[in-house]
Length: 332
Image (cartoon, rainbow, N blue to C red; front, side):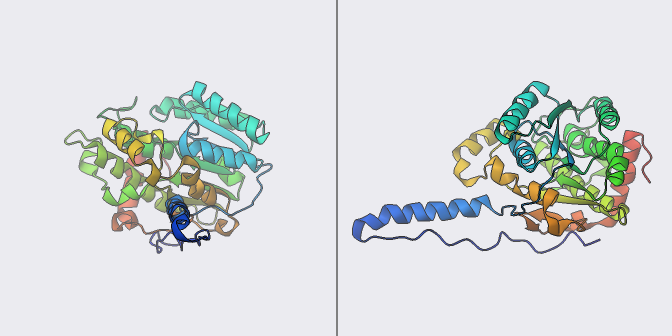
């Protein structure tokens, strides 16, 4: 397994559009060229794969909005059968209808999934396994950010419960179907914020001290460590697992913070659109060159640097054991 510490970068900027004319007329053109160039930089890498996905089954959690919705739209255009797994099914149906109308792909299906409730996760997996014979791509995309202190239905701190434990359990329940459908891929949406995270085993649920910004960072580090250990355990199965940072995206993820919502609106020009933010998820899901790549972390459709805490194998193994204990499962 390749280590999660490859070099990072967005790649070289493309050439700006030509600036023509003379005198005062140059200024507006130059301004537009600079603006266009900057927007291309903000947008980051794009998935250039033209891979088709007819006959492939995909699950995307949290695909009713933001980068999840744009990922679903792209994979539906490629011909995949896309399962949109969301808590808010009304919003998910609206998104699915939009995607079906745009792509002509009627195989965009909505299924109820609440990652803050292990009963819902188990019910989703049970229904899926009864109805679908194959699963080729699982994209663990859904997440919460900056939540005031709260707990899931099972008593887990909300960030840890939804962002890590919910997807950990979902992956466990669907793994055999992924193996049977191999080659298959697991894509975990993490964040650059993992650099600020620590796995605080003595206070996993923030009962002794809680900071909602750090809680998000901790959960994103858990995503990276889960990916690392999962890839190690899946060697030889033709099921890969990779994690990614989508970039700073203008989305609903910051809805729990009035200040962040306000800042996101003011500085929207400096943020990726949901479509731009979805590119690395799409890349990890379909790029031909990643067919056998596993245990990596990507940003802007290329390998990115992982914090030292994200490369700690002993912490990854301990987090795995503790996660299994919390969820009451055996995953050897």
